[in-house]
Length: 194
Image 1 (cartoon, rainbow, N blue to C red):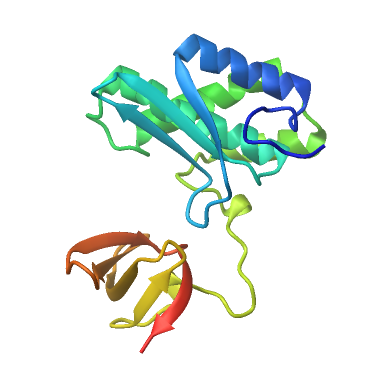
Image 2 (cartoon, rainbow, N blue to C red; image 1 turned 90 degrees about the horizontal axis):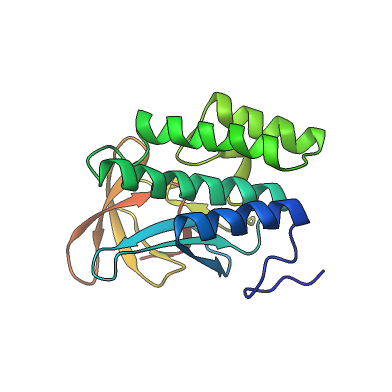
C-alpha cells in the first residue's frame, strides 16, 4: 500500500486504532512527516495555543512507527505530569515509556519479531534506539566520525565547525552566526568544508 502523509492506512488496523485512540484521548495533533535524517519523531508543546503535537517519520517500518509514536506520547504524558521540571529522557520519562509499551502489548496484535523488539525497549528504554539508526551510504559521514576543528555542512543546509565531543552530542559553532550548538553525533554530514 502506498504511504500517505494524510492517513495511517499503511499500518495494521490495530496499530491505527491504538494510535488514533491515544491521539483523541490525549488531544494531540499528529503529523506524519517526510523522512528526516536526524530524528524519527518529535513532541512539541505550544504554550500559546496550549496544544500538543507529535510527528513521526513516514518511512519507518510498522513497528518502528508504533514505538516512535509511543516514545513521543511518553514525552507528552511526562510534560502533563511534570511541566518540564524533569530531564527529557530521565527516569520519569523512561517509566512512562515502558508503561505505555506494556499497555500497548495488551491492545495490539504483535508478531513474535515485533514483540521481541518491544520487549527489548521495555527492558532498556532509551532516548534513541540503535535498532532504528539512520543508515548511511558509502560516501556519507556522521558527525561523530569527524575530527575536532572540522568544518562541515548538514543536509539541513546549516554549516558548523566541530569544537569538542560531549557525552552523545558534539559542541559545534554555527559558521553563519558564531553561536554554539549541541549537534547529535548521528547527524548525517552532507559535505566537508575546506
